Image (cartoon, rainbow, N blue to C red; front, side):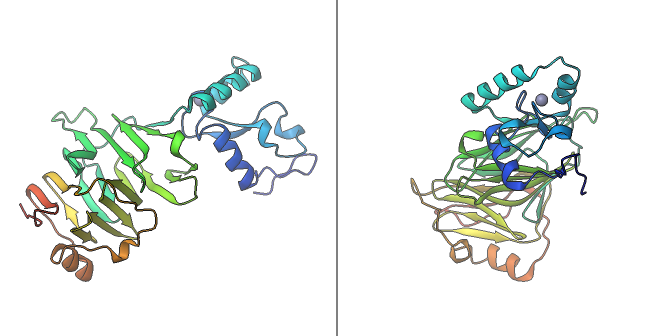
Length: 297
Ligand SMILES: [Zn+2]
């Protein structure tokens, strides 16, 4: 798309300007925090703009943009909302209105059906599902993802995804793909989201020395002493798909090479070498900790 205005300014906003605008608006609609949004020229409309000035571009969701166009929402109010939003470090919001009953989560290529608790770290679920027997009620998903420093980057409260802007360097949303970056530019979390799947491509969730690390179709879970690597696994009908416990207070994962991390002699090797799809029925898929070997239910 090479549409230009009468001053020859392209409609395409340079990526560096977009990033400044996202940061200034705390990564969501500057009025209400909603995703998705568009980049909106605030005081000088695009047709009259000679440049893409980051100080005059804001993020606006469809509903707020319509209110602005209808003069229900004034430029002054939008600027005030922006000041408040930045000062309060308000979260970014994306609400899934309903989830299908066969909703599943792909953790770096390993499929886990939505069933109660998916992965527990120190007994706390990263994701949990409110069970419902009524096919007319949507499934409710809740959870909390951290980055490799243990900072929460995304919380999910009953299908509402909240990005924690205070610890974020950037959050980009391209169609349904969400990419969370830390201030140093490293990816903290990347997923695609629809009403049938949460497809996690990139994750580095940590708690003390416990980790859930997924990248390039491989999921590693464990702690400093024991772990498992999974590829192409499928989990069905588990009360708890994966449970991992930490063993020491803290571990600095900032420069850890995860490919050199120890993982279980049986679980990791079998799955990673053979890339087999497994199906497990029972109460727990396996449990990894310093005192327990993995356990098949
Ligand atoms: Zn809005």
